[in-house]
Length: 94
Image (cartoon, rainbow, N blue to C red; front, side, top):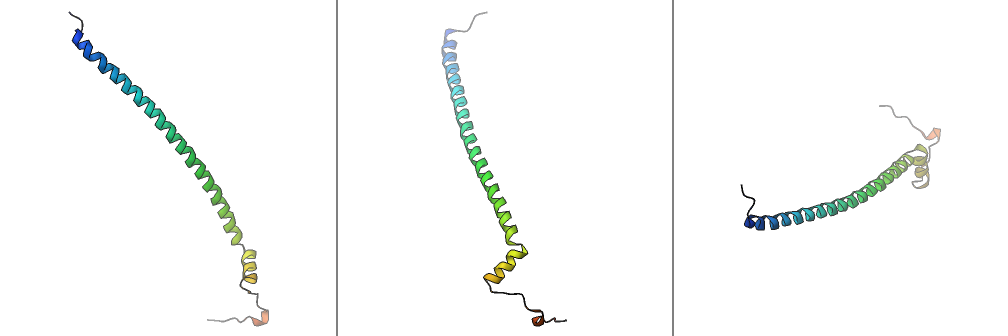
């Protein structure tokens, strides 16, 4: 049995060399893309954290604005509303 011919090796060696270079380029691109995606993930995580903090602050603000004392204070100061005297209250029956 004979070994591989010189012509076969002359074709096989450049093909294998190109395949190796292509594989290396693919590995480099994959690593670069993974780093880009990781940076994007970290930015999105920071944005998520910022939005969660803002959401918590808005919930606190909403709970403060909906308290009876706050509503009464706004009604008295901005709308100049006051609690009527007992004599001024009329009960209307259906």
